[in-house]
Image (tube, rainbow, N blue to C red):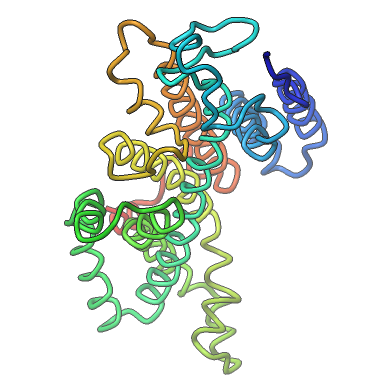
Length: 317
């Protein structure tokens, strides 16, 4: 018997379209108008809201549990139909249900890893740019070493030395090894901000260095952090998908978009839908994140369209 979801996907899609339309109509302030003035950014935001709501409402949207084998013999590799929207896989599991629950894992790993990497990168970059001299030299040399070592190599070593990682430790590991580029961007911004009058005034009033950084410097670098975070989520999701595909990431029976593609690699010719839809989900979310990051960059920094000043561009390189 076919299960019926409590909340059809069409309802989620309609709610997203309505929400984006209301946000666009009620956009106030030049930054919001610049963001919604970009069709790509508005479309990307809608796509992210759609997948985010599907993930949050997974128990209501998905008709089956992600590991439920409905009929391992009779429903093996069934193509998409009215009863099974995206078909079934090799083990008779509903692809749509696994896609929805897998979004929880893939998006969750990307967001958690980004929170860790942006927090560390922002703190290190702010310290290096504000204190300069020896602090800057030591921290930036450590960053250079981190950038020289591929993240996937570190993760593979960690997996080889222990057991396969569950989603939360995997996200923490990705975050702890993914903050180096963010720290260089924040450092370049802080080097410019520390010479501004409001920062000098705070120092003249006797504010402690970390108070100046937290209250005056980092808020000025918020645009860089927000754009970097959006791109970082995309990069973390791609890395998780690659690791899961080779068996070093999220392990079955937990569903993620990466291991869904891995499970379907032997039936690409006979059941292409089992890998097509998770691949399209990864592609759509990554493209949406890039579109949103570009929209945020133009909205928060109007000069970004003309490119950064030569001095800042030199620091970022």
